[in-house]
Image (tube, rainbow, N blue to C red; front, side, top):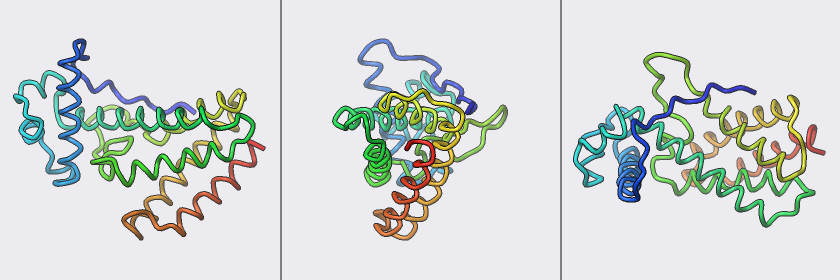
Length: 206
């Protein structure tokens, strides 16, 4: 599994807490406006107004709205994997099924509660103007394979990496179906997703 990593979206990495706080406000504003206007109507100027910062502050970090949205996707992925890692600390190391449940449950929580997640979850909807596109599901699968391997005391091999990637791709597609059916995620479809993940991953994790 070797997904193309996204280009680093930040022009400048914040060093002082004040700059880090300003960057967080910019990303928060970006997420809110995605829910209100969608990606196509998002602009750096409206983000600056919502965040209460000069437009120059936005351009200090980002060259355009795509880079800003990629940074938001990075933050979402970091928060997702951090939440899973926190859950894993409370789970026994011998059973993989509660781990898979935690992976799905945390994703559902983010789908329901995180601003902008419907437009920018772990990747950006608009294709890049040039260069290879990042593979958001591939990046998620890499993180999850590492977490699973570490928690279960397994060394990931190609079969495990491939199985986790397929499970991530299938879960992504079926979760979209669940949220098209019900804004909170159709419970019956979510139950089917969970059963699918358990049955499929048992091939490599049992």
